[in-house]
Length: 186
Ligand SMILES: O=P(O)(O)OC[C@H]1O[C@H](OP(=O)(O)OP(=O)(O)O)[C@H](O)[C@@H]1O
Ligand SMILES: Nc1ncnc2[nH]cnc12
Image (cartoon, rainbow, N blue to C red; front, side, top):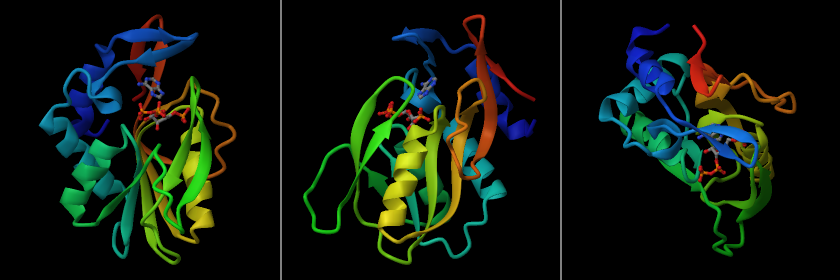
């Protein structure tokens, strides 16, 4: 494992797992801001992404609210690339793109603003589980005629069925829940 990600891996193994309507949901600073996310973790996320993704010529980062925002922010500060947040609230702007998001345990409308046709974008989120969020945001980016350069998540749940995700997704760590605890794959 990338040694800079070891502290994150250690704290993930200690994360509590709660039941959300039958879904094993772990509670961690990366995915919830609870407990507070350590600055060193945000730095490791920014460093880990910049080491794995070519950000040269990327115009915008795109992060879905809520828990993509702190990772997108860390990367924006490290790369000097502006970040558009995909909101769960409509602004009613003429170019706004609305899509429906379904996760493993909920659903919502998502609204994309601030991404223009031809923009080269990198999509950043905290975790990939069912892939419903990433699929929805990719659909919105396609409707906006943006060019999707890469998709990166901090954590990929390998125990979730994300067969429906048709795109390549880079993750910093792959995890699964076993016997009520988070396991980090080496
Ligand atoms: O792969 P999926 O099944 O789509 O799950 C991943 C998504 O679920 C969470 O978002 P959520 O919509 O729960 O909102 P939050 O970020 O506000 O917690 C998380 O932040 C991801 O965006
Ligand atoms: N906090 C979380 N823990 C586990 N799986 C998730 N999927 C989306 N958010 C999650």
